[in-house]
Image (tube, rainbow, N blue to C red; front, side):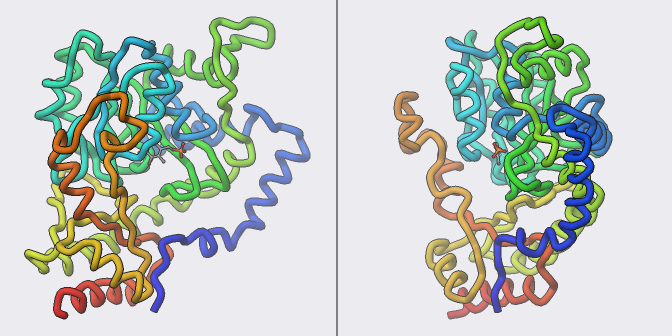
Length: 367
Ligand SMILES: *Cc1c(COP(=O)(O)O)cnc(C)c1O
């Protein structure tokens, strides 16, 4: 049996419906920041319970523009998790600020107990990442932020429709950044992203920042970027958001089936704690495994596209060399880098495939 990681070939069999909607964009020439974009922005914000959505051209830009909007720049420090996808740190660096890494919990999200010790007079913002679709510990994080008067920019690129105490990830901080990249849970046909915020002034600044700083056709308030959400991608986003509850629920269903089975393999597999006040959307279904590298090899030999997200933490990447970190600085992150494994749990798998993956893991440890 084959269990593929990618589902992009199965996902858009109804592409003709989307083509028809795109034809309308073409017919009206409504290509830049037109009705398709504002419609998707409204739908996305409403889905999350946020006031404003600002479409941008990637999740990375959603972070860069958010950080620019709060004034992050050279001389500043921005705290984020050491295990995240490189784009989080890249966005911080793009503003000229210095990424400051923080260790993570056994749930793969930023470790609140460590954040306060990293705050200095130069700290400009906190960027918690709802990594793998696991909600970060927002009560603690927001309390620390408030105490130190720091804005929080949430990296929710992997956490569309994840919730913390019934509130959507991305709606706690001053902004929440989302990616619509083909590999994310709400995925369009190329690069795209969106920022949500409840702050009207922030929404206003972000709308100008993504469009060269233009207030209107003739007046420029500040230097900005060309980071507009493409109309064609907005159409795809609007189409997909209609099925996003099904996508999310299916992922949760498969993850919970995996949890039940793998949770019994004590000593071999460690399923992270599942806390009742969090809604996990399993962008990456990640567990800790004994003999991880051998397990990975065994799974791949048996047709299961398991993966590692990621084998090298950010503080040990060459791009971070100038930041002066060392092996041993973030023990939990480093330990996980050697032991985590990701299984596919996407919406285009069936029960047989999930059970086959479980069976493969059993067979591996029974050898
Ligand atoms: C994907 C991702 C990003 C960047 O999104 P792009 O749309 O690819 O630019 C940022 N942070 C995290 C955690 C991501 O997973």
